[in-house]
Length: 267
Picture (tube, rainbow, N blue to C red):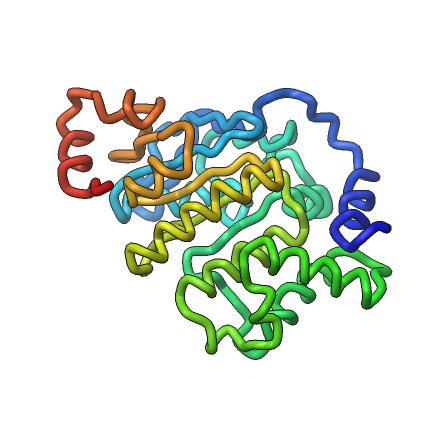
């Protein structure tokens, strides 16, 4: 029997996107400034299908700006962003909204609806984006997503009744309920205690394996980057200074990278 998530995928697949390549995100020569502040200065980046990639850097280096550009919450001054075969600056509003349904965005502060229950936080985006679902299909989809992040027993709670880690899990579940092909995580471990950070890191890896997503993890947390991602892209001074595996990046003799490692990393 088809559940809500399956129905959503069938509806989404009716729209033809024509992307069969391994590259799911391609960023070329991206620039973004705010007044006289140059945040991104010619950024290039590729995300391959099925991989987790960490964009690593200090606070204030433009990591969150980059992720907002990827979902067209901001527009670049120059450069191109191609996602799932579609260049963002060529899309109509309707086409952009359809593409956004294929991208999950996990906000740094979860962006939950405090007035809604855990159930309501998940059912709302589903019913807003997928038409003609029965109550049973919505219930099944919500329960599946909550079970995936270990919150099924919290279904009737309010976000204010949850711990910080549980709120992070709920934010991820709300994103996953639409079964996106790409996940964008903005500082997923920010503000969490060390034990909860480990749990969220494990969850990101588990979600990649379960849902076969391609993910970008925006973080300044080296443990998160090393634990969750196959590749690291080190963003410093508006450009990617080094890209590769964790070991490749931090074997660099570049002084800024060495300082970042020495200051931040603990296993």
